[in-house]
Image (cartoon, rainbow, N blue to C red; front, top):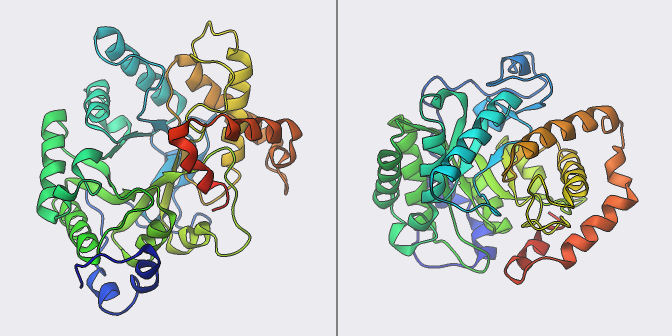
Length: 364
């Protein structure tokens, strides 16, 4: 497999063919009793009522080929609008995790060292209550020094040791940002690391996160070890009529967690999200509308919003309940809601300068 850099276009054309496809054809068996995959409507599909943290107010979706039933809303690792550090912060994160468990939410996504440590601490003594997604992004594929199987496995080992984790449910390696490339050789090293981690029982499943759509599609098609992807899906993302990424996600049966559902909080009128924010009622409504809209796409397992206050968790359950009442028709109400269209249009206009790239995820 060549180690020289190639364009994303060439990678997409070549990654599933010939030597590259054969070299990346690694096994994808799960560890720690992973359920056998089955289509959501197949006789052998998992029973939603047996989902981890089952709550009848929550919805559950099959997490691709993992066979797990994931809650239709998960806990994002970021805590924007919340000051990190100290006893008050630790209590907040522990309380939010407790609220999520009670609400039937069963996945938490941690993609930075401080998130890994914070949520491992919050889950101390109840680790089995949440599926844990792990990524130490600054020491993974985004950093040229960590693009070998040995270096990636060392990152996983170090992070688990510091967080006192015996295993993680999903190791989802953070990959390139748009405009950059990974070589075939680097991808092969990453796939080897994932295969070894699953084999050794350090992670149950392997996945990747990237903001580069072409690269993501190439990886889904090329890596059988890939069980879950974590990538943007906002309240203004739409599925292309043809040649959509979601066609590949469905065909290859990978789980999908959507980041940035609120477009870096650009959908909201308020600035704090706090219980006493004068815009709380309006912003809670906007959050519910966004979650309902995103869940209209059956390829998505769950959006993963950052939840800061207890009322945010309850608001997620209200979003599911509204969806059940209004959005199970052939054409869900939220898809032709004029107010929501106005809100998401304003959301696009309010995007911070460093999040303008999210507009590339409007038609996917």
